[in-house]
Length: 537
Image (cartoon, rainbow, N blue to C red; front, side):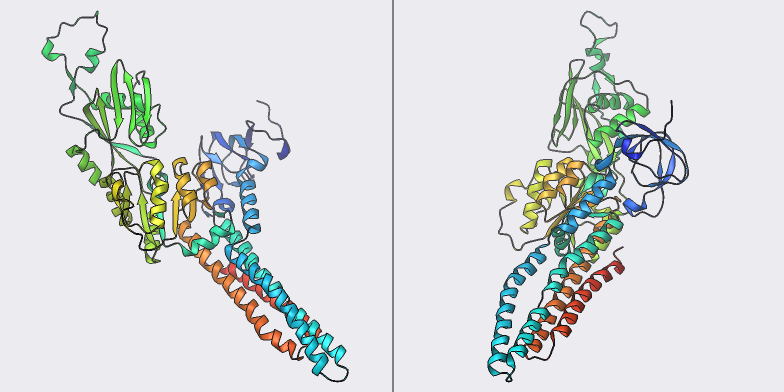
């Protein structure tokens, strides 16, 4: 392989790039050879270098600390994460918050009123002033116009928004628009998706149980009809082993993209099991998957029976997700899967609860599993058994103040039965494609940086550093930014209310008026810059 040094603008997607210790990573990509520790603080806000190995993604413009590695370029130019961050920050800094529109409306009335006051000042001093009242009246009218210039009012909001979005980017919080930054301080309910948001999204198989009635002639029945067996007919059945149960489930699940299915397949590969050929594969949204192996109908997913198996109930109480395996509609086994809770999840939930913000967990898991995980995290309100298409509806109902929790599947009929007691400002935190409608429907959508592009596009705020404490930081940043904006607007209005009458009375010359006007603008900008010292961690 020939190695060449090329300008960064000549790098193309698919090129293999070698990065040595101390060098900056030029573009986004995936490591194909080697390992290293990479300083990603400029993007994620994390001070500790991140360990990277083969198959891990690397971000352009971050610093390689120790090892040497080769990686494949996946995004170049305007498509890199850094370029997207710059674009988002520029768009956010250029967008208008609702409170800015209010200031613009006030200014639209303020300007003609000031002109009328200036004319009134001129007429008053010209008619009732000294004998040389023309010049004096003109100077006082000009002083009124200068002192009332709404520069401070116009700068009050955009300067604070610009500083606020910049601070957010430094802490790994990307704010798409000013409206999201403003609305975040009003949030009183936050809904967290479970898988990949509160948990690491890397579930592992913890239990494999073959049911007592799992005596089946599955293997023998699959033989061609022209084959015979010397075994007596009452011994044609066979007790499945744990490995055989796992092999059957993994054979069907390998065609699925669900994290639980991937966990089953991963475990089967680790045990070096040979997977069977599957025909007629079908994914049943929110339920499971099915397919045929050697003529037998296999179903892997939620229980087909309304009554859960006792062993499944025990696993659910331990916070594990239970996958039921059926052959020809006969239950043959149970697989328990657990997803590790993120280190920052419990602290983030505890902090939000102390701030008086209601936390809710939403998941497709059954109620027992959801309650067990909610209990570990300190989340008292759980909405379980939610189909992907129902997440948006759950958000809208919570916005209206419906306090229905538990199993959505069992309470669909009563979900809109009561009159909403109050309106809630709801934030939704998610990462998957199926979260996109809920992210868009929420007052504030917050996407994890590790999530899908669709989810990130639908959200108003993106957490690049994947740390759930950044949800707390985003709300604190919003509150401090809004406090700064309100203080700026107060100063701008107070300045005009106090000094316009003074100028009308002829106590300020145009020169002093211009100085006061400039100082009011400087004070607003300075107050916005003080926002940089705000502690949001």
